Length: 229
Image (cartoon, rainbow, N blue to C red; front, side, top):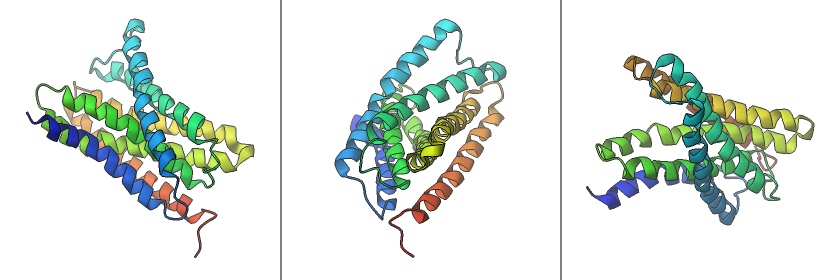
């Protein structure tokens, strides 16, 4: 087992997506220092998420693989992980003066999300004793892009909230709800073991999230105060 190759496979997807979003922010790029810190804070947010998820078994919220019992677990995981990312996004990036256009919500949202996804990916890949390469490739094209989409959708509404103070509260709530629901939907179909064919639902959820994410990027790009026809 080549640990260096495995580590590279675990880290590459998150960095690649983070770089893609950085390049998409063509009108007023954010300071690299803030982006790096956001990425690292996203990685840090894995810790409270893990603690909460591990504690969930004490109140009976378990990953059983059963159709009905998987739903509350998926909702718990989706909300917990998105809330942890949301907290660092709001505490660190949202108040910054460099957050000066709606697209910045997407930029910082993705940086936090990719920090989270990258550390999570390292855990999954490096500690997989059975098929680490299969896990790395599967997550490269599924879980990591999914986290990116959750970050974009969350960031889209956070970007609106920053510059629409009269709707700020509603938009902030929408941000965490939308990201959590898409995350839960994706996880729900991944978790079901009783009906393997339903796993296609995760791909459907991801495809919808990708389409909405690309649309969100386009909208904020064209509505930027720095955009010129």
